[in-house]
Length: 421
Image (tube, rainbow, N blue to C red; front, side):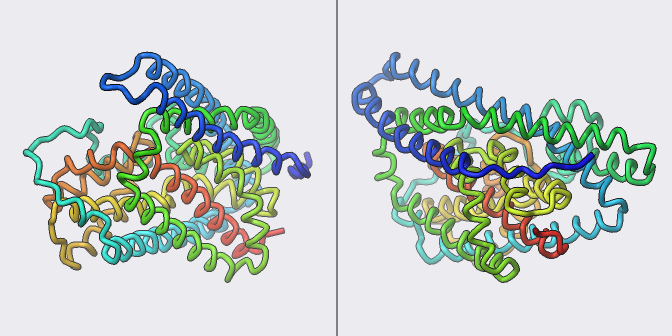
């Protein structure tokens, strides 16, 4: 059975344009709603109703995307590994991927630390220390070795797929793929079936993506209708400096990528525009996963390499989130006037480097890791309340950066493996 490549000419560009238009319309409609219905002492029931409708529309899209992820990860990984044919190749690609991920994570954390120390976005707030035990409203999940192991090794593949635990699905698929490779001819019919499943899931992806502009419009409109654009002025300095940090991080990662890819880096950026816009608009890097896989194969990445690197990247290589964590912890420390010596900051970096890997799949995982880190360094956890109001706006940037970082990782490792078309 021949594997078809997914080459289609102009529609992706048109789709990107629709998502960009939806983004702008969402801001305009959201601000109009906030201006007309939001400026009241008590929450306006009509505005609340409209926001809940927008939220439902976004939620439907995210659910449709999550529906695709598990079968897509299983089919691409198993087929990729069965075609690789030996555990040595899998191990080599896995080690290269993890080496890249940890280097990129460390770069993100260090750049975040450097910028917060230079720009000091929290020092102008002069907050009083809150009472002990102030509630942040986050799920009580502390990063630990037990949690980390539980997020890696599945006790049931059905449960892992039901909860979209990407890392657990990867572990199962790797065992399954290696077993298929070692059985050779006997496993060929199943590998062909899973190959067909990959193409079916990618076809479903292209249908689901037609609804992406509606989801992006609804997500943005809901945020702006609730908080108004005025939230940008009160937190403008912090938001601006965080986005500057993301821009510098993307530039740095792009330059490192260019060392390996040369001029092909520009082609890669063209291909990943839509997945990045999608992640930005919905504030979810997961929403871009199926489309990103499709676009990376269109760009010329090896499907076997993508099938392994991308799911691992979604668990280990969240560059935007890593930068956000250093930014947030040091911003809160500055807001309360708490001095953090350089030694403490470096320990914090190491703590974040490892604890951030242990809560993959937990809702608002970044905030939970930040909360645990704050308590470790005796910084009031209630400081998180400073960020909750703008978390969605920050999440948009970090989700897009996560997608960008993972696409560069997949392209570079394809090149390393001499498997880039």
